[in-house]
Length: 612
Image 1 (cartoon, rainbow, N blue to C red):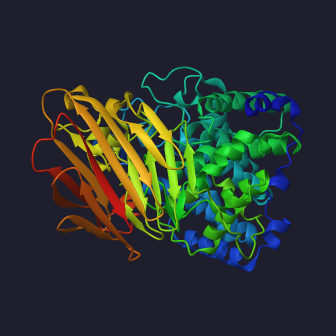
Image 2 (cartoon, rainbow, N blue to C red):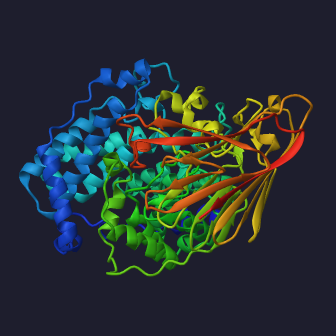
């Protein structure tokens, strides 16, 4: 069991940590024998970072979030500093240059001089325009920054110490003050799981993501054996709290876009701990890790489309193919390696350059991969499901379908109990809208005023004027998935004002069609229902049916039985500059609304057939 292995890991440490082999510094074979394509990419990114001015971060820009709720104005320059630094470091490792080294030193000084490494959106409690004088907490990006600086002094220790050993000591001191010490000494970080969070937050990707960067900082700058053991024991306890909270089926309720920093960061933690334990700890071959790893390819649809519930963007590009390949190799999972290779071979368009600042040690680890020239064939199951997070998946020669149950207090929750999506072979027909760029409202009490979070902007019914409500009590109380169909009980997903006694949702399928049947029972008053269906392509309303032609030219026909249908459609444009919504590579989304001409009966049912 993974928790048992972690609990004893501090006693298995083989010290000193083999840092030169794990993350080879400048001058090692990794850099002198880098494949031409990889070397050219490193060189090109380094030149771009060198030409760019060091971004200014005035403290009034930090205060902007508290004043306006806007995250991006500060974070744009915050992440640019970190992205430029890692690109400069890699370029220097490839071809040492004194001008690059001077620029790296300037970046180290600038980052060490920042008032806080915690981004304003995580400067709790909110209401403070400026951070505390001394670090009282570690957030995702304080830990990221710490690992980046520790990695920099590790990779460039010799040239940096030639310039000034005081600079190296300053970097180490800031990493200890802002990351290592508060991680080790402060128990009330909500993401650690040592106590219930007053705000009701659940353990999520923060736990392994921060721990990953903590461990990399630790092993790259600390050498004292007793301190290392105590620090590793602390990390193991934090990770065990996270593992205790994860579903045993390997599902990730945060969705595929968070998988790389949930399960992926968990793997990075186990990987470095396995190295520190001499490579024979058993951490990387645990059965649970294999199940959790398989989630990413089991949720893959085609190209860069993934099943995107919760705060998951519509298309994932780029993907962490290096992480996926290393995971597949360590765990003996050919499917994961095959999907990783496909993403590596495909032309990637990096729409989120700030990702370069996340878990920067991965960039060096990825350079060690010997990529195969061709990817193996992937053969995912035609029927698949995660029973504990209540997600089902069906694949036929013509389409991919998925539905979910769950509850409305999941990580990165949307009010989406009973949601489903339908894709053709190459492009979507009916979609989950995903999420927009994060703002202050995304994670405060106004979250469900945002349209993407509301059940009315999912493939769900609006019942007697009611959409679903947020909270763990609003849930799917039955989720039975078989090879032939899926049965969901959605009555408890809606508030009492919906006047529901029962709402049963049934899906059945053949190779060419999908059928949805909703059956209901109301209390006496009010029987109004609107079914919502979301499409990126404009639906064509015809007599007796609706047709949708997706971006690949595939066609879907929608027909209804049980009522005389009345169809309406509306278009919602995506905001200019919203990277997450624009990841769909579309300008907006269509909502198709189905109603009946008369009030619905007290007890009844409706059948919608989707034919390809």
